[in-house]
Amino acid sequence: QVQLVQSGAEVKKPGASVRLSCKASGYTFTSHYMHWVRQAPGQGLEWVGIMNPHGGSPTFSQKFQGRVTMTGDTSTSTLYLELRSLTFEDTAVYYCGRGLWTVVAGSIYYHYALDVWGQGTTVTVSS
Amino acid sequence: QSALTQPASVSGSPGQSITISCSGTSSDVGGYNSVSWYQQHPGKAPKLIIYDVSNRPSGVSNRFSGSKSGNTASLTISGLQADDEVHYYCSSYTSTNTVVFGGGTKLTVL
View 1 (cartoon, each protein chain N blue to C red):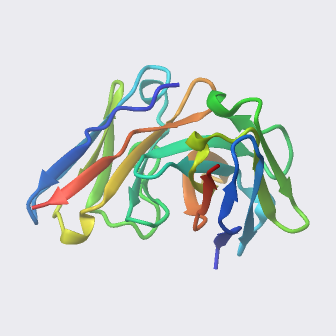
View 2: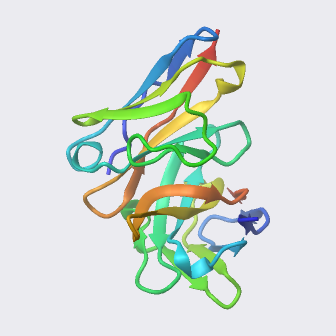
View 3: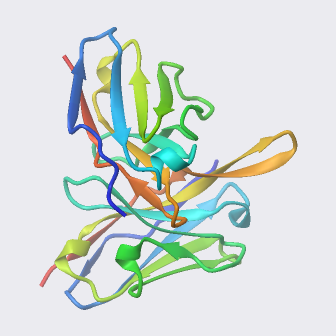
């Protein structure tokens, strides 16, 4: 079945970097855009960025510009997110999500909606 | 990009219908038919229930429906059930090729 399996919880100190992974299975990794979304404790969802595993530059929320990297390894169907210069405010559950596409009249339409989500990775920034 | 505006909470009785609003601007909700809605149970990943304003993914109950008027999108849940008592989030594509979420709404089934 289609699933996204994320790496385990991380505890980091302020100023450090963290690299999260998201392994896709059950579908062709390069056929869907991929997103990262985070959720601070007791808070709402916050979009981090999107990338096409097939190639091209990712797009990030302006909030994370300059300290985030998003990459994909097509040989292992794995998506990565690296976040640098961590602060306490980066403490959150980070989710990867697959972008939805549909076929209408023989054409593929890509939607900015996430139809499959990983289980989430808890990142705790603590001194 | 500011978060979309949702009411913090809404409530309804079993069997009734409720509507959750999601207000944005002409640069997001009003400018594109790319509004999605997600349902999130505590401690779980969100689940997509509506995409492109009013489309339901396969397997999602037809008790969930979406609409949009101007800069405000809405999610309607009919025939309220106890299991509907969780958080709901809207999101929209934006003019800067990004995605913005709403702050979330907690639904209480009385």
